[in-house]
Image (cartoon, rainbow, N blue to C red; front, top):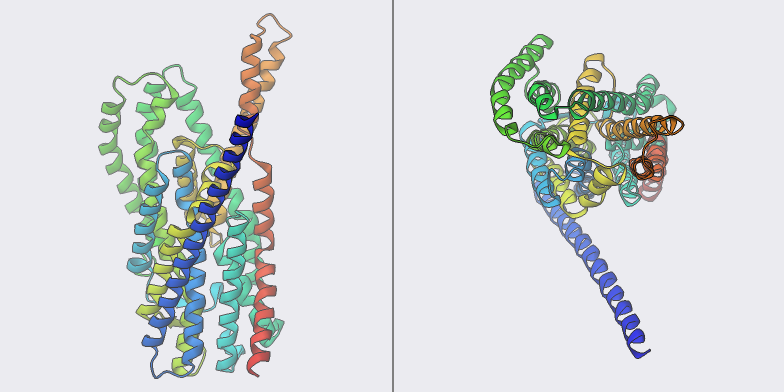
Length: 492
């Protein structure tokens, strides 16, 4: 009796100690984030000495840093999450790769000019008064940051671009009425809520089906791998070269469509000629097992995660610093403009904030995207990465305003639902055989049923994420409008 009581007490103490350690780590992360924001405010204050509206610029700098932290905590998970979930990368390795390549993308290819009004949904000239425009941009940025923070807390990967769009729309309406918004552009953005995940999901599912039927379900898996893995790796190299030219490097180099196709095809051929003998050499002597084939996708998957992170850093740094750059430019020139230059200190806030947010708070969403929606392995994660890049290229060529976040998570859903459908179909076939002469053993039926249940897409995450996608723009708009009215009331 005494031993049982002692064991219970020790168990309770261990639980209390674990909870205390977790709380301590959380406070430590928050402390580092606050330190970063304090540094941001000092940098902004030093960089804007003598400028009008300096305190507003410093406040906007802190809000921009807060937004960048949230982008790092939420959006970056889409690039490295599948690689972590498939165990191609450890969490530490993913954080290092993402931090390095996100920063490189932001600094090297982030460009020096951005549209101050995301997606052109609001005409800054219709707002008129520079003070009102500054208040509107600060409100939009804070609203977007708060919404992304809430989504991260709910483990829902959302589009930070859509959050900024919603914040700008709401603040713009509060400042100058409904006429300030370009509603056809808003309609196209709303359409992307459906287009982005569907495109990504369908393409990822098609690639997974191709791998299953041409490699996994062949009698000689290694022969199938020798034939098709070099093609898939070369395809990834060609697609990503085109992806980087169209998206990752678009602010420093804008090649024509012919150049993009030519370079992409050239990279495909060169990669195939290099990779084919390497795959043949590595596959020699491998066991004829799925596990052996999966190892062939590990290195290409790591490269895909790095390239996706680079392109993301080049594109999404504007979500953190675009409205901030607008505030700085308006304060310096006394008027609102459609495009503005990005001061170096503003670019630093975006790049450093995304990296800090990733390192401090990124693991939560990385686990959600990589492991909690559906089970990943290197082949499935590879399909997600390849589908994400191809979908962005197709959408860009068609002029569709899609979200990279929706595409990547939609690809994860596509892989998961395909596996669910395929496994359920096989289970149904197995059950049909039970009435015939080739009835399988009970253990085989039990294993098939257990496999079917394990591979289901987790409906809780699915409904939470889809709901968050649907309400991102309207919620950010309401918050942006409310914040603008509060700021205008306070300073009027």
